[in-house]
Length: 419
Image (tube, rainbow, N blue to C red; front, side):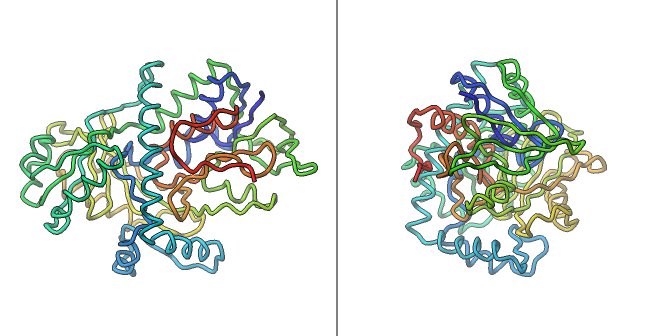
């Protein structure tokens, strides 16, 4: 079977890898000059199995209202004359209902656990290196009221098959000595034992190299123009290269893994994917004092900020901004991440050498990615992973490869099926 994968980020590269392992002849096309150069380039670095609860949950509407008007708020909603934004926002509110949020949490947890298993198996089989760390994630809480709810939260995670432990401030410092100065401000912590971290961009590059060695063909600098459809079946994909030369690519199956741009590509086909771009920010700074820099990945639950040690650098990421496809950086939001790093780990990193980044995360209202058959013959989806693209990458890639080749995926997840 010949398969064309559109997109060479985490979703596209993992799809290509597992399809090739299943015996398919795979071609990957991407408009960038290499793999993992958009959403997957500089994310927070976390494989966060212990955080399956979606943004859309019963507490979200009240929290968002409290953040209105703050340029540095963790979630910034810029109201636009954009019907897609309004539809997405209304659907998001519906997904905040308790029953829907519980269902979505269970689905994310199942896919996250499966994805972690696939990632570890891949790493063991290939020896792939990408600045990974397997010490888990420390979720930090500075408010007593938040810490008081930790036993209930841990019970909920255990019920989903996710393991963790509650730590006192002193125990948290014992796990991560770099938190010593912050210790007095902590009310408690949750140690996600199934979690890990790593450099998603290095992973993309490394896996793309392994995939190419296994026969996968990568075509970079190629923009998808449109799909050719005859009698309800896709017969080919028209692309343009950097020199604006056009060509047609044909395959037995097509996997769409184009992130936030997926919805626009299939809209002419009559498909309305509930994906909206959510802009996230990160900063990356070189470590100058290893004793002051954390080694374990951290999540500041109050501020929705994450911090990961990637080799000799610290990556701090967070915030979500709904502002369409506008990729212009907001200095205040980047400055908030710099302040967080200064306040929490002073002297750990060289702030004069910070690399700033922002990118669009393809979010669905429910936070559930769209994985499976699109409803159009030969077209499959692996997109809409939002903030969990790194966490769910390998499980999603393996699942779509199973679906395309006619195998039932192992994870308990609402995969899309033919109409």
